[in-house]
Image (spheres, helix red, strand yellow):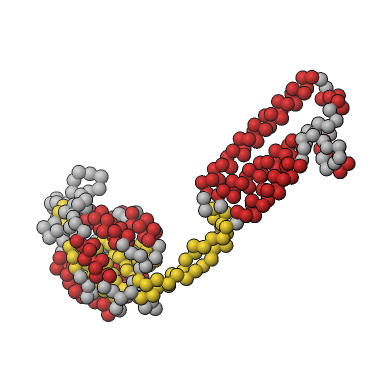
Length: 344
């Protein structure tokens, strides 16, 4: 793999075409000035040591040196090495409810935004663990396979919205099943699923899915979003709320019974999120109690610096440029290096 460690320096290459235009303009103007004195062919005989080619050759060499130095500044790197990094940690799959009901505002700023805040802080607290992300509504799909790349995890987290899944609903069981399948069955690491939902399950048997996870040695923790008294669901881009077929405003309520049952079946804990960090602290404490095992992660982080080659070529060309004079050198004129072009 090839890359530049500091690619912003490559913008300096824009100077090359500018300098080229200036040089061409200068050469054209110089020829016009010579022509103003008389016939260029006659004047050439009066200036036997003047070369019309050497200045161009020197300019080209100088531009090549400039480009090479810019490349050196950008630090070209090549030949990455794959390394296996061993860490002591756990594996965590997050199952996040992104159904429309998660837009209710009984938790500020709304259930989904608060969920993303909690997860972002949870990822920030991780150091040697692996994390993955499953999102669900009426369907469930893997947003991020389990990884130790926390930057990617937070990037994917920031893009989540109910628009990711067209089919609405709350298929908690499907999300838990998919989270189970996302783990590597051969990994000896302790495993946990963090389910974040308002508990309005209308699709499948979520408790049975949690029980299956427990049989696989996976703990299921549940963070309930919302309040039991509920709140209306805002319609995106409007000042109104979702209504049922009879025209009544739909009030989405946190189903704490469902959330408790899922956590019990998965031998985890249930905690209701509010406008504090209590839920984050409770889940983090539970994760810290899981046994840390050795995790192996393959990383590609060691890049070999390649700027030396470009620097050497630039130095050689610079030395050559010093020894190439703009006028014809009588000592080297016998070599006739530029002879074919001197007469142009």
